[in-house]
View 1 (cartoon, rainbow over the protein chains, first blue to last red):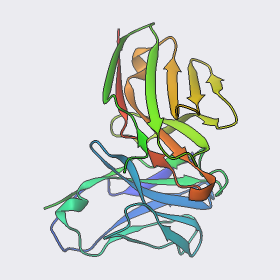
View 2 (cartoon, rainbow over the protein chains, first blue to last red; view 1 turned 90 degrees about the vertical axis):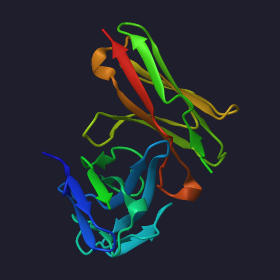
View 3 (cartoon, rainbow over the protein chains, first blue to last red; view 1 turned 30 degrees about the vertical axis):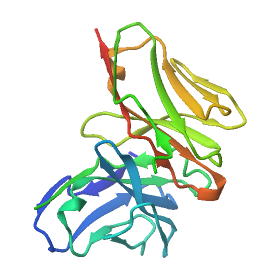
View 4 (cartoon, rainbow over the protein chains, first blue to last red; view 1 turned 135 degrees about the vertical axis):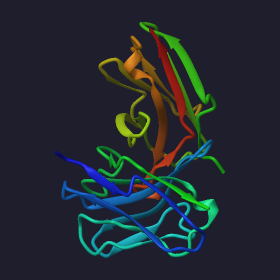
Length: 115
Length: 113
């Protein structure tokens, strides 16, 4: 089954404690991205990757890091989480950059709370 | 600066009637528009899209209309079904922004039996 898998689904952590949210896709997609969803703001792109070892900032990259060492994985790293990073996070993948606007598959989301 | 706006946070309609969800955008460089649907505890799923060279695209019960001069698009669902109850996100992209999608705030649609 084609899917994007995020882990964990729920996470409560304390300010400053480094964490990683994993994302994996099994569709051999080139393009992957991370979004955060906040009330009244919709989904905002954090980082994206057009292929292995190619990443770039989205609209709200501050406080986040990503890596793309393998095609299937695109982890989101919060080196020093702060309460304003409490949000619902989604990973997404698409077949290619040209098709990033269609057939985008989203993971089920990670609900992060930073206290 | 919200470039894609969905001014109605919620919409309630009766089963069998038409649902109309609206979306406005400000960036004239956007040339591709999409609607995503999201159920609770799930990720968004792609629903329908439209290129700026068209003014209408239809897929079963779902039709998207684009009015470029007004920078406005709408999603029509006919007939509405209770299973359509979800949050609907409008999104836009343009050549200059590459493949980055800019999303609206979302509209919660509730279809009452």
